[in-house]
Image (cartoon, rainbow, N blue to C red; front, side, top):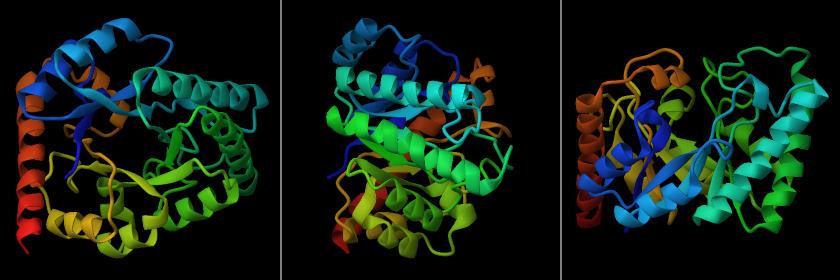
Length: 279
């Protein structure tokens, strides 16, 4: 029913082949690669994807302060837009259907100028990137980050408002269960609310670990995805217990933990999908 993938960057600084081998071992269909078009060896990645019988389901944009789509510094904003365009090219080359977009950099929890100015900057930036993505037949999935990681678009109501202001056909939305566990009152209601725009789902428990290790009712999530006829990938984005998610790159040498999370997450979600199909 679903294609299962996991986002690459959660495995820290390990070699890409180790990550792909792990996903193949535990029955994943694909991988969400980090949006790093300037440093990844594309030919090697394509060869490894073939070797381990995986597809590139999507790209996860990496939004650092130098890639701030909301910045009031025009140079930074232009470079951020170009970064998204370059990721669109990367997605097209790898056969991925969409790219995740965060309107500000991760960990930007207050405006550097005003919220109104930075909202307008982000809308303008994503609109420009979206026009380019549309010409390449690639979708952009806007992600709402929780209030502790972003101040601008941190719940799905704001994400809908943002997407509708951008008003480009290929600019859509994603649901991240971890962020929703903080910001949304009802998982089911939130998913239904964004269903017309929903093209991507990230799975992690409320602890941000693998599904089934925390308190999220994933059966409710799966049931609602079926109800809204969601057809996109189910992408795992679990993390070890760290504060800044980008610090995972320094969390090396934890292959046993990554093995455990990778197996736990897909087993838990697949079991709930099977349960849902019998209800």
